[in-house]
Image (cartoon, rainbow, N blue to C red; front, top):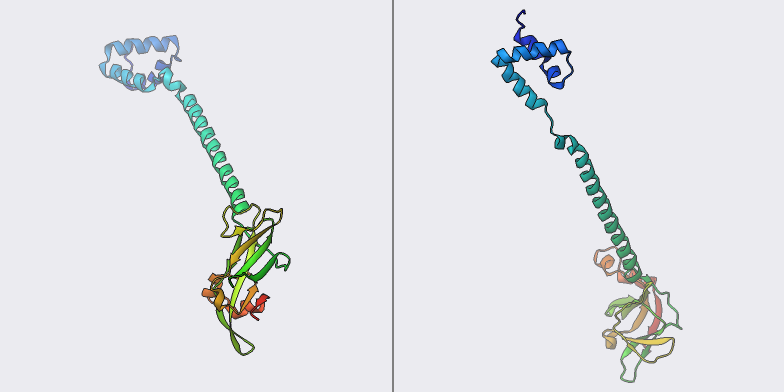
Length: 219
């Protein structure tokens, strides 16, 4: 039999290993590998490289399943997290977002108690907070007066804390709030204000006074 070159044998080795060569070619390669050490080493090396264990053949599927489980876990966790954020936002909106209660003399009045303490009396069912200032000296009609500003706010949920006390147990209740530094106060105006706007120079107390409503004045 004519001797076959090693290069030809090595070219058909991949097909030989896969078992897709003809019977004659397989017989030729078998005979050559028995007598050629170099081609036999090449055959062993190529056989190891081309051999894929059964476990490794299924590993891509296992990896896909593992990735899918991880993805489902991430999606579930993200859904729970987003739901928690939305619920907290709804709770915050109900408890912490406040709106100003419009002034009404039936709802809010300023009075002096028997001890001359000047107080604000709120008559209603609920509110969130009361905002007041210390008296500010402001020129009105060429005369300096000490003005206090105040306003009440409400929220969708009742505030759990109030710096006030209850006078009776009727459906509508009266809440008393002492006016700060009442001995210096010449007048009280009901108006919404923002101390940060004033300190930042965007607004002044005299400009706030112009849009306020006078609800009490010293006689």
